[in-house]
Image 1 (cartoon, rainbow, N blue to C red):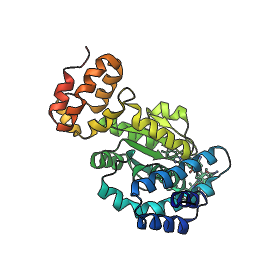
Image 2: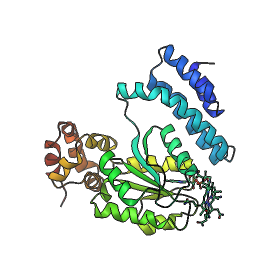
Image 3: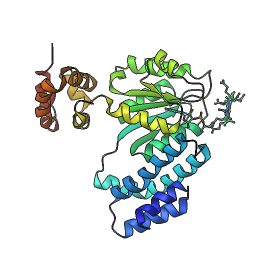
Length: 279
Ligand code: B12
C-alpha cells in the first residue's frame, strides 16, 4: 500500500497514531505537504462525511476520524503556512452566548478544517460583540454559530443584527446549526444557511465561500487580496462586486474578467472595475 493510502485508511479507521506516523513517514520521503493534505487527510474526511450521510458512520466514528485527521494536520500546518498554501476559506466558529455545549461545534470545526478551511474557534459562550470583533480581526469568509438551547438561539439573531449595525453583514456569510435550530429559523434571522450536521456543514460552507462568484470563480480569491478598505474607499463592498459580476453576466463580465489581473495591484482595481458597473 502506498503512503497516501496508508494515511487515508488511518483517518478512516480513526487511528490517530497511525495517521501521525503515516504523515511523518510521507514527509520524510519528501512528499509535498499539500499532497499529503489533499490526497490523504482531506480525501479521507470527505469519505467520512459520505459514510456519515449513508448512515454507515455515526457521531463517535466521525469524532475519532476527525481527531486522527487533526493530529496529522498539526504536523502539516507549519509547513503549509511556509509554502503559502491557500485555504478553502476562513471560518470563525463559536457556540453562542449563554451556551456551553461544544461537542457538535467542535465536530463541525474539525470537519471544516479537514476539508481545507482555516478555522478560528472562539469557543463557547460567545457574545455578539465577540463575533463582531473577531470578524474585524480575522476577516473570515464565514461565521458559524452553534446553539443547543432554545433559550440561547436568539443570540444568533442578535449576532446577525450586531454585524449589520457594525456595517459588516455584507462582508461575511453566516451559517448556523445545533439541535434546536431549523432552516426556518435561519431564514427568520437573516442568516445565509443552516445545516443539520457536520458533513453537510462542510458542503454548505464550501458553497457559501464560493457562492458569490459563481460566474468568475477566481474573482473572489483575487478580490480578497485587495483590502476591504480599498474597495470601500471606491464605493464597493466586495460582495456587491460579486453580485455585480453575476448580474452583468458572461459578456459584460468578460470585460471585468480582463481587468481581473489588475486586482493584484490593489487600489487601482476597484476604480477600474467601477467603470464597468451596470446602471
Ligand atoms: C452533552 C450535553 C450537555 C453537556 C455539554 C457538554 C459539552 N461540552 O458540550 C452538559 C452536561 C454540560 C450540558 C449542560 C446543559 N444542558 Co445539555 N445536553 C447535552 C446533550 C445530551 C448532547 C448534546 C451533544 O453534544 N450532542 C452531540 C452533538 C454531536 O450533536 P449537536 O450538538 O446537535 O451537533 C450537531 C448538529 O447540531 C450540527 N451543528 C452543531 N453546531 C453547529 C454549528 C454550525 C455552524 C452548523 C452548520 C452545524 C452545527 O452539527 C453537529 C455535528 O453533527 C443534549 C441532548 C441532545 N440529544 O442533544 C442535551 C441538551 C442540549 N441539554 C439541555 C439542557 C437543558 C442543558 C442544561 C440547561 C441543563 C441544566 N439544567 O443545567 C445545561 C446548560 C448548560 C449551558 N449553559 O450550556 C437540553 C436543551 C433543551 C432545550 N430545548 O433547550 C438538551 C436537549 C437535553 C434535554 N433533552 O433536555 N448538556
